[in-house]
Length: 283
Image (tube, rainbow, N blue to C red; front, side):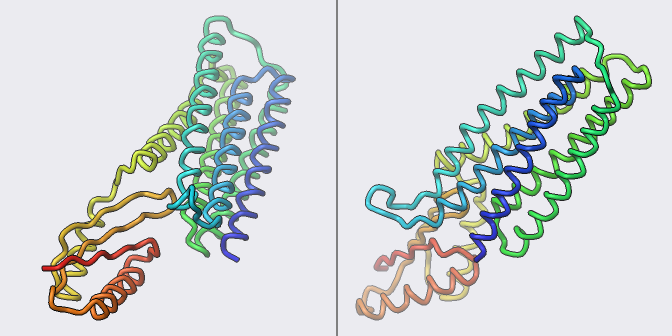
């Protein structure tokens, strides 16, 4: 139920943002507003992120198999990496044309239409973002929370574009180019975050070393046994946790097995993660 509602929210978010982007790009070709074009491309980039969220939620439901023995969680991170590269190219395209507009100014037409389009895009995007955030919070879906934040960013970019076009409307020069560059900055920041997080996951880099210490301390305190090591492997939406514990060599295989089960169950309950493996070693 949670995954289904999450997928539906991400799917609707994707088409909403894509629709906003297409409308803005089409209107920008009529009004010659670079800010509107930049905001449209930004919305399309956000739609791509929403698609990755939808795709990720879909893939994590697929069972592990002989080829993908750890499941499909990293597919989401790989898709996010590719999307980040595409988004960077879009940002560079916007910056290049903004610089070109500063050198060779082009007069925009029908600023009222541009302002109304940006205002409408911002309102629709923010409304959709708060709806998605509500579902993400309800089911604690991390990727969907990211999608909601992304939509909020998209809405705020539209309002920044609205402000720059409005300033240009009152005679302040180069505001259309400046507004598009600010939106390009939003795009680059989004790409940086996606690139950093996806690269960490793909390279098995852990950005939460404190968790290892917390797990070690918890086991040693609750069960009074030493922990030789704790290994963390990021899987996109979650972590694969491998805990090596030291047990009494005189305990039977059955006793060790039951004790390991108790430790694992306790860790799952404490740290809210089902991808936990506890490996016993003799003292």
